[in-house]
Length: 302
Image (cartoon, rainbow, N blue to C red; front, side, top):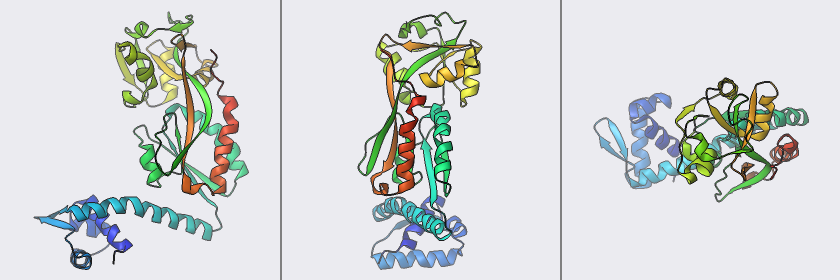
């Protein structure tokens, strides 16, 4: 009979690459783990690993068990953590994943009143620029995903929470600062500053530059919005950001925002959640708080 401990062992051996290393992380002796591995294969009636010297390579059956382990074990671990919270009188922790780097400032404005409303709920934010949001949701690494580009998947739902316009941010002294809108070819001699995200996930490339067959003279990446805006204000490059965020920085820096193309680039922010979590009251409440915050993000004017 397949047991949870079997999946734990399969996952750990795959992670560590050898029985010796896996035994150390599982707090077992190598001989005890070797005995357990043999017992698992006997119980299941099929080899799980092929031995190659001191290392192990998963068989087809082993690969299936590894995929099962990576799908099921995070759910067990999340359930145990939640039960522990309930036992301690806590409601839980809302783990938020960010696929929208500039949305962090917006999120702070949502989290503050949310925490006041739910004093027994903690919030943890995972902000990774190479973040695989869908995998994180399906793998129970996060409970909510903030994203401008939802990838619909069975078992997940995406709720739109606000509209916004993507604009070009330039220094007030920049020649484009007074333009009604910018054309793609006007950026061929510019240094484009973006977050360290693959260009395939950047709207200014996908919806503006590439359709026109244009590329900037130079592409520079910066992780923090503050530094990015200081670089732009110093006329060392241009950047594309949500209009609401550009306007916030323009209040304290010498910046201007310009429409990207005559029609502009309209976007939406979505919150992704698991359909099975629909009955969790504090999670549903967070989505509602996010929807009510849309006054921070002015709608795009045509």
